[in-house]
Length: 75
Image (tube, rainbow, N blue to C red; front, side, top):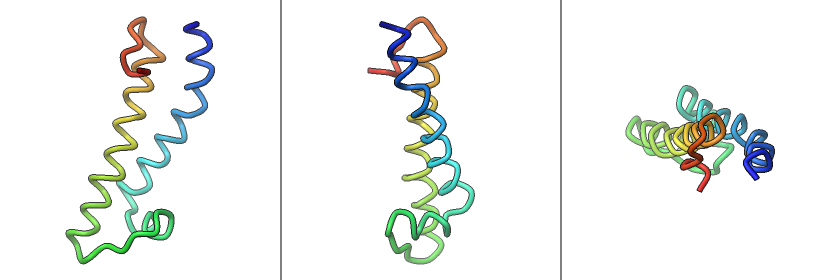
């Protein structure tokens, strides 16, 4: 069963990483991708923190679940 989980989660993790890095380091590119309109510098920082942070945190949890024997990140 663990091999099935790793096989299903493995292709998803790099996509989550990419979706987290783009808004974190280039939030203006994420504006068109997510159809949002930031208001000033605070809006760009919100894009960085909320969207980028959420996807990067989910990538970390998926990686922990795949690489360790305790798949707490997969549930």
